[in-house]
Length: 246
Image 1 (cartoon, rainbow, N blue to C red):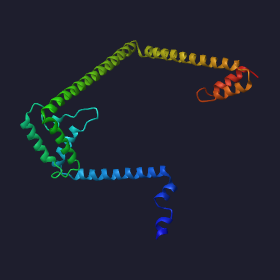
Image 2 (image 1 turned 45 degrees about the vertical axis):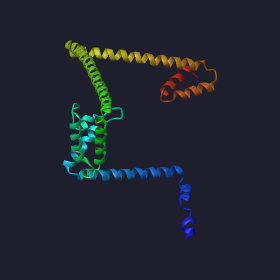
Image 3 (image 1 turned 90 degrees about the horizontal axis):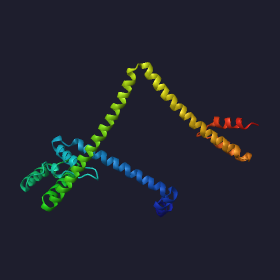
Image 4 (image 1 turned 180 degrees about the vertical axis):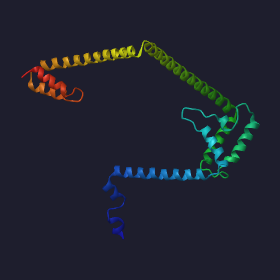
């Protein structure tokens, strides 16, 4: 039994030696990912089997409480409040929702998270000093969101104005007749094509002059070999060879 257990070389140490630490790490990661997927599937089946009357308050609380890392959750909305209620209304709201989402009474797999969110909201808003600080932070967050929304609207208006101006130019050209408009577009395209060709020809001329200045045949062949790269193309090299002569 000793040989079977430790002498076969397939223990933990032997397996590490045969597979290597990197392969073992990938295997462990794959097992962990598979286990995570299985757990999530089980949780989703539990969510789907929970009656809607019990799932609805859990989902509503978490939808309000879960926010991005740089955003502040509205704890008043988590408790179903508007923000001006007193201590008595705060306690009533908390107790009513806590009875609905308590994990001992609600079979939803996210009930514990929703209950924790309620506790966090109540603990923050029930203490006057914490509530005052939270109100200031919430006010700043709302102003930042409103500023971001105004900036977005301003950008969209600028884009709309530019698009409308472009359309007015096109409509004015089209009013002269489709033929004239097409001829104008072709002229613009021809001018752009001519400018692009001039830039390419200038680059080719500079490259050719550099090639002619090379005295060593090996350097010339090296430069011609580089010219066969996709950036320049084989046609460029052939033209250079033709211009150099025999």
